Length: 97
Image: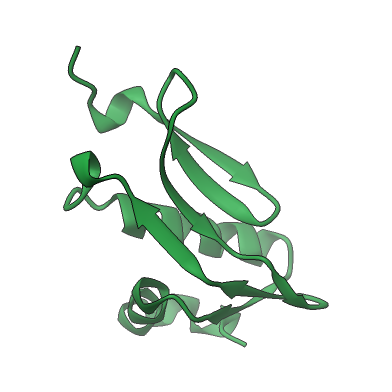
């Protein structure tokens, strides 16, 4: 059976956003552990090889930004993908610590 990105779902956790298959397999994630009170460090972005180049990482970073805004937290991006994503999306600059 071939899976398409539409078969999968996003899980929002307090310090991670995950993209999972219907069977629970984690296919992509962004992790953002707490660095200090009200600030997280976006330290890891991963996308399974089978889904690379489909915009999944960007989708997860946008979901992460929404989660941080809703929970009134700031981000200290250290993952190279996250650093570049925030540079390309100045509309989210207010979230960068």
